[in-house]
Image 1 (spheres, rainbow, N blue to C red):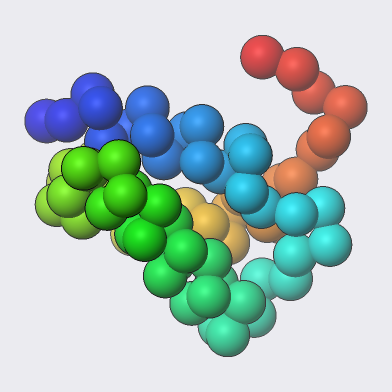
Image 2: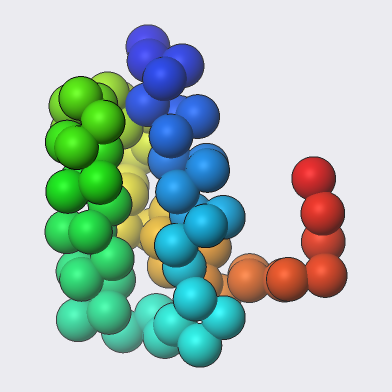
Length: 73
């Protein structure tokens, strides 16, 4: 397991999914490419993220569909 991978994914989603994002395949694909590019820039391998979620696609769609800017951590 990679705590670093899931922590990065959580922070990335909070910071990089725009309020206006749509859950279509093209938008999710673009977000996925950006996520992996940003992870690579920090030395985080794709495997560290992939092993933490059953489906990255579903994770990103869920984040888009359930976007709620009024909820704080």
